[in-house]
Each structure stands twice: as C-alpha cells, then as structure tokens.
Amino acid sequence: MATFSIRTFGDPVLKTPTTDITEFDDALVRLVEAMIQTMYDAPGVGLAAPQVGVQKRLFVYDIGEGPGVVINPVLSDFRGDWTYHEGCLSVPELWWDITRAKQVRLTGIDLDGNELDIEADELLARVFQHEVDHLDGVLLLERVSSDERKEAMRTLRQRALGLPGDRAEAPR
Ligand code: ZN
Image (cartoon, rainbow, N blue to C red; front, top):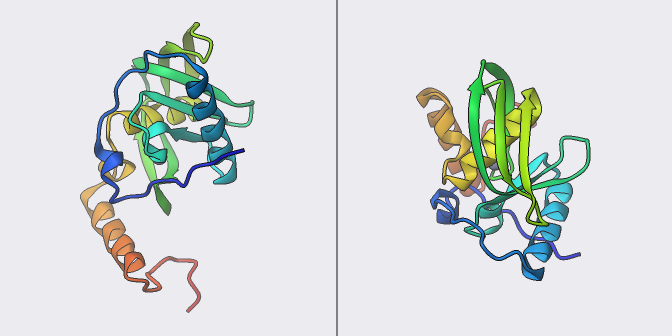
C-alpha cells in the first residue's frame, strides 16, 4: 500500500484553501486508501488532504470505530463548548488544551457519492472541526493563545536547527 509523507508546519500547502471534489473516480479511491494507511501509520485519528499535499476538500478519520471518509464536508449547528487536549500530525509532538464546539453537524459526500449527514459529539466533533480547519488552510497554531504560539514557534525553530529544544520529555 502506497503511503504519503505528512507535510508539516512551514509547508505552504497547509495554508492554501482547498477546492471541492467533482470527479468520483479510481484515482480518488486510491488517494483515500493511501490517506487512510498514512493516518494509521502516523498514527493519528484524522488526516486531511492538504497534509499529504493534495489541495482537495477531503479528509479521512478513525476514532476507533473504523475508517471514514468525508468529501466536500460542511459543518453547521455548532453547540456547546468542549475543551480537549489537541495535537496535529503537521505540528508534531505539541499539544494544547483547545476549546471548540462540543457538538456539530457535518454534511458531505462519501466515496460512493452518497450524501452524508452526521451528528457528532465530543471527540468525533473535535476531529471534524480540526480536519475542516485544514481544508480551509487553518493550522492548529492559529487556535492557540499568542503566548502558546510564541512558545511553539521557538520549539519548532530549535527543531529546525537540529537543537534538542525544550520538550518536557527531553533528557536533561
Ligand atoms: Zn491536523
């Protein structure tokens, strides 16, 4: 099974909004299969097309109930607040407590072209909001406080320079 390397912070593809998918062909099926395998290998609970360099409105997910794919997703009916420890495969090894809607409704299309309409709560709602952010060119770093962002940028710069950084788990 082919897999992708996951694009990380600094890659302009992550900041570029995506376009709707109009062709439901074999190439789309192969893309989805490779994205699911890439998500499992990472491992992660969701993966959006821009994270593998594809500017299309599509993401895959699995919160432990089997893989799902949503094409041309739209979120609506945001209800409540839920704070949860959230990370991103494109900003590896950093996590923040982020407040998002506790419940959302997601509509879209599945791989067979059927309409999807999913009421999501807590973790599933979190994954949906995170992945749709990716499709809009929004990274997790834009959802944290300015202090947290500064700290994260410092860590990412140190990593880029090959320095050990200041990760809590780093040996001293
Ligand atoms: Zn992400």
